[in-house]
Amino acid sequence: VFYCGDNDIASGKTPERVADDFRTFAQLVHEKLPGTHVIYLPIKPSVSRWAFWPKMNEANELIRKFIAGDQLLTYVDTATPMLGTDEQPRADLLLDDGLHLNDKGYAIWNELVEPAIAKALATGKTTTTGND
Image 1 (cartoon, helix red, strand yellow):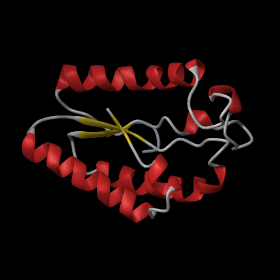
Image 2: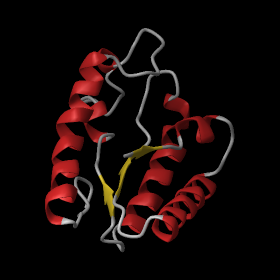
Image 3: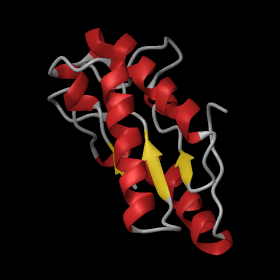
């Protein structure tokens, strides 16, 4: 299970660079560990980094599209549940810093990630979940 890009975008990397970095990572995993499944968790929206959300969301979409073409990669949409009905980050899922997940936020992620892990282990195949 792989989460990346949050700090990268905040430090000035482009969405394209973040997506390229993920592609490189996935290719290395497949070269060194053939048959290994990688489950990608998209960059999450947060209160403290809301100004970066358009670029973060763009990186997520680039990665989602890349993942769609590979049976050993899975995209689990953990980002959408982090948004409220007003399309703003849900502060109730974050620590007081407005960036890191609290227990409630991790509980939502776990509910989404556990079935993807179970499916990958049981079938040896993965599919994109959420945002497909």
